[in-house]
Length: 550
Image 1 (cartoon, one colour):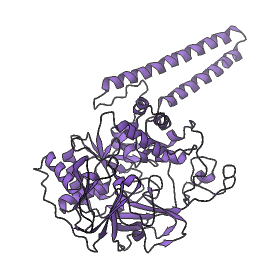
Image 2: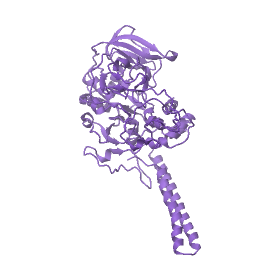
Image 3: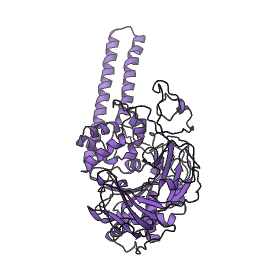
Image 4: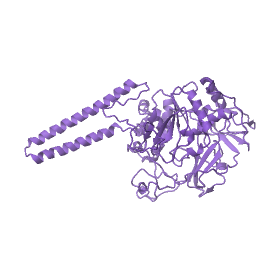
């Protein structure tokens, strides 16, 4: 269960003492007419309050000293007079979930939208246009060095470009075909690296690697040279890891709780060998452990690909979104401290690394979920990151032309035009109604039922009701006031509202102290959804991460 903060304990103590202060004198006076009894009662109540305050202050001082003594050590001790880090739960768990590795997160918010994908695969469309987008990689120079000449032929796995600051890390082509050039954006930054794909993909053959005999240096060089390294992501900052850094641990979340998210149990079916090979590779790259976050909600047993995984530490999580976020899982398993470096991957990226060993080729093919109420059918299609959006959606029925296409989910995805391309780390396409309409007196009398944390809307009475999403924000930015809304939906021992204010005021020390090293855009996205002030929290947090990372 999630950690309760000191404010909850203080509130409980205060409520008890205030009740005692009011009730006790009345009880005494009811049985005795002496005026001295009231004074005595007030003195006793005051002593109790002072004693409670001393206990509370002593408890906080004890915790602070414990944190100071344990700083820099891989030991977590709850030194409180009122231990709060119990992982005890009254939940009746399935037999395959060990209670000592189970976390029930009580905070969060599920956005139940219409347009969930069915577990079926549509016929693969003929996709001829692909692109790798440098902007998908945080920290990459805006103008990387392009290797092939325009019009030249490439194989899947051939070098495509590299960052001039880290030339040893290669970005490679996901498909074979003709390199057709680049498209530039503002300030001549390279926005797209485009090529025309062959109908039948041809792969560059990779050298064989024996994990039993290969050193860590050999494996790092292999991944850097043949495109696997860019599938690794580092916390903090969500950047491509520096090859010289050895991660404390590696984390993988095997389920997704975001709106309309794909069912990863379905999308990894049949990939046991590649997934396990990827895990074995990751174990050779870290001095710590590979941690696997599994779905403990009980709605569906995790795939055998995940359940039977070896050489990993398995943990189970139950809760509303963002319980499936890897950042939330890291926070509860082994939080990130200043100076720590951890890696995380999506299960499909683990499979790509595994295929480099088992198939000896760079194969990024995966299932993409086609979601949203504005298209039918909602199912899966097999393609690769960087595929052309219009070609991926060809053959689908659109309910309306006034739509927005998002690569990713509705909280963290990127808006795409019809001629755009899917993101490198995405496995979902969402189509939703464009919210370019005005709702008269919407703030006074909302005219449509919509998902909301507020009990003003009757939707909370119907938890299984599915909503039709659109992009209307239902209001403009307002004064940024403390509401407590963020803490109600973020299951982390962090105060996100104060953290965001520290970023806005460029207060470096407060950013560090308030936990910016543990945060990423996907973690705070649910806070942005419930924000009454309509603040662009993800954008602000990224600015803070860039400041701290300089």
